[in-house]
Image 1 (cartoon, rainbow, N blue to C red):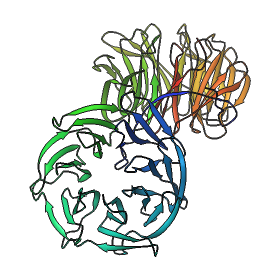
Image 2 (cartoon, one colour):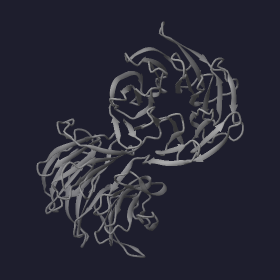
Image 3 (cartoon, rainbow, N blue to C red):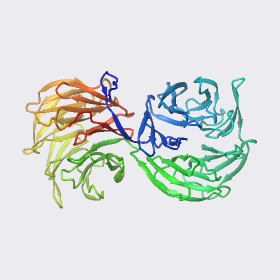
Image 4 (cartoon, rainbow, N blue to C red):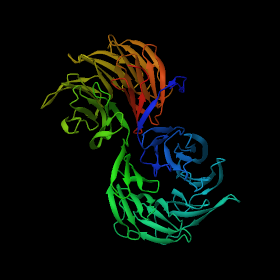
Length: 617
């Protein structure tokens, strides 16, 4: 792949992505061609082929994507984003066939809340967020705004959902906190006129909308957990239900099938298939609040997305879930490969550790410890256990096949365990804590014993790497020091000081040099023998470098950090040879797989990206 990166370097080839932002309302969309799924991930919109699992990426947004819409015939996509207070949030129009941007629409401030295309794809209506409060109608062909208006009256709250009617290009509905309006567009005078819907005594937050096929009525899902049926013509409330047994934690998403049945996704993770007026439902429990329900074709099959970043597939007649894709919904803190194999890898985040199959993206194992954060993980050399460092100060060891807890070391560190490494004979663990201590543990069949505690660092230990012979290790800390320890006599051999918070350190495979990096954006080469500096490279134009790994041959190393770029460096020349663009959150860790086939990088938005390693083994 010979495309140029941002600094003139060759661009790294992105193989695939594991990730889905399940918090975006109606963010998961099945394209009208029935072949592709569209969903947001950080600042990227992903188009995934359902049969071949090939992914395409739409880059352009400068911050997280907050809403996605697809036109009725599938020619256009639109996506809106959030931005910082006082700045304008962009809407991007994408040409689906070319997979590229065909326009940027900028009017709303801070956040674009929701988007909807008109039935014949001529118009796009956009809804600004809480700090903007306006609704704007755009001409899709000219990319110009036609007219705009405040989305809700001064006495009502802000609007959160918008939908066009199915057969009319000049009527759409907006809903939100105490507001439900039907808008009629007067294109000649470039005006839009709202009509408040009469709901009698009911006060509701309408979170989602579904319009009947013939436009005679529309359904509103509310945060109270009931469904309002409104007459489109009279704008009056037709019915409200269910009276008993409302949908727990509110209706989060809503869709209407050709049979007249409603698909209702609630905040407690239940998907219900029911008919009004009594809303007696068949229910299926899923993981996480249901934020998207999208029909494939006529609705014989549909996909459901949840806030815990799970995507499910349902067939209409069976109404049984099939888990299609999973990923982390929180920031990922670490990634490791087992010794000598590239087929699997493990990642850790808040609440859980997951083991993945590298090429198919299948999640093979999930180990959950609720409300705890796993800071670092390591496979033992024999592959018999996964060691993990947790913020509750415990070191836990699990079996890699079943995820059973083998043992845990209580109170291993007083301010949480932040780094971990294991000797190649699997008999000792070296751990680092938030208080700066480095501790060596002896692990036997039945017992775990503290051998030595070394107090030198003044702040959290961020990374530990062991030498091949297990007689020496290097620890990096955010106090600005890297210390090389003697693990036989448990004393400090060398200390490297720098004006930075060290985030990562690596031994060169020949073990005579180490490379470090951190918040000063510099990559430092140091002598192991006396800790003297050899040279420093400018590692990044902006932001700290959080992750680093060196190839088995030592000829190249990779870095990733807050600038969201993956860089491959020539070790001897000290030059970046390839740059990978694809992450939309800060990269927290990065690894080259043991057989040097792939580079895998993980980031704060829960994404796992797999890149082709550019050099032969």
